[in-house]
Image (cartoon, rainbow, N blue to C red; front, side):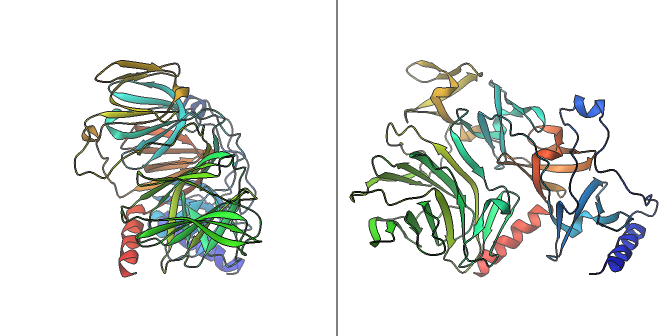
Amino acid sequence: MGISSLKSIGMLLTLLIAPCAVHAELPLTPPPSDTDNENNAPNAVSLKPDADILTFENKDKLHGNLISIEKGVLNWRYPKVTAPMLFSLPLIANLSLGSRSLKPARIDTRLILTNDDMLPGKLVSIDNNSVKIATSYAGTLTIPRPMVQQIFLESADSSVYIGPNSNTEWSDAQNKSKFNVQSGVLSLAPSGLVWQKLNLPDIAKISFKILSKSPRLAFSFYANDKFPRRPNAYRITLYSSSVDLYRYTNNSGSDEIKEFNFRDRTIPMKVDIFVSKPKKQFTILINGHVFGPYSDDYDNFAGSGSNIAFENNANSTLKIRDIAVCRWDGSSIPAKISAPSNTKSSNDTIFFANSDRASGILISATPKEIVFKTDFAELKAPPSRVSMIILAQDKRQLPRKRADDVIATLNCGGHVILALQSIKNGVLSGVSENFGEAKFNLAEFNSIQFNIYEHLLQDADNQDDD
C-alpha cells in the first residue's frame, strides 16, 4: 500500500468517524502531569516510529504509533502521513505495544481471579472481605475476596520466567512463522516448533496451561541449541490417552523413561513439571493428578542446555498460556494439588514451601505473617514459607462479561480483563468487574486484545470443526 493511499484512507476514516477532529500532529511524549502522578500511572516514554502494531479483524497489519483511544475510536499515527488515522474499535483485533523500557518491578504475589485474570504485585493485606496488592501498573488494587481463586506467593529470587509476553522471546526452529504471541497466549500452528533459552535452575518447577481441545504436543526442557534437529534434552509427549517421558541425546538417540495413561482432558489443562537435576528425577502433575517421581537410570543427565520448546503435533492450533519457570526447593515430592470433583470445597487450602498442606480458613495475611485456622490449630507463618493458597470454591463469584471488555497483557507476566474507557497521555483508564475503576500505566503493557468474546466463540467453533 502506497503512502498516498494510506494518507487517503486516514483522511477518509477521519471524515467518516470523527468529522470534527483536528488534523494535527500530536506529541508522542506528553508533558508531566500532576494528575498522572496522583493516579500512580506515570506518562509514557518516547517511542520509535513503527513501534506499535495494529492487527485488524481481517488479519491486516499496520505499523505505527498509538496516539490515543477515546469514545470507541483509536487514533493512530502512520509514518510520513500528516493526518492522524482514526479506526473504530470493532475493526481492531489486537494492539501490540512497543517497548517503553521500564525497569521490572519486584513481585512477591500473583493473584488468579475467578475470570482467570492474573495480577502480579506485592502483598499488602488479606482479610475476610478483600485482598490488597501494591502494583507498579495501577497503584494499590483492592479485590473482593470472592473474586479471588488462588494466591501464589514467591520469594524475590524464585521466578526465572513468567510469560509468554511477546514474539521476540521465542525462536521459530523451522523459520516458517508458525507462531504468534498475543494477549498472553502462545499460538502454535500445526507442525510448528518454537523454543526459548532460559537460565533453568538445577532444581526447577516448570508450569503451563493448555487451552486447546484434544492437544497433541511435545514439550522439551533442558535442551541444547540443536533445533530443529533432536537436541540433548528431556521431552514430555502428550497423546490422546497417554503421556510419554523420554530422554534424548545425540549419541544414543531416544530412550523412554516412563509411559503412563491419562484421560482427564479438562480444559484448560494445567501441567506442572518438577525436576531435580542432581537426582535425575521428575514428577509430573496434570490437572492436579500426580505421576512420579520417575528417575533417569542412565549415568548422565541428558539435558545439556537451558532451552524449553513446544512442538504442536495436532491438526489444529495449539494455544498455551501461563508459562512459568521458578526455583523449587526439591525437599519433597509435591502432594496432589486437586482432584476433579462435582462438589465445591467450603474450605481454604494452604500449601507450604516444603509441600505440606492444610485445609481450613485463611484468617489474614500481611507481608510479615499469614494466619490460617484449621480444625486442630491456628497456624502462623511468614509468607516466605507459603507457596500457594486456594480460596474456598463455594464462596467464589464470577464477574459479568461486557461487550467492550478487552484483555490487557502485562510485561511482567499477567493479564487483566476490563472495560476500556480510554487511553491518552500514557494512561489506560478502564473498569474491572473485579476491582472497579482504575488507571494503568500504559508502559506496563505489551498488548491489548479487542472483541475478546467473539474470538473465544470463533476458537471454540474452530476446535469443534477439527
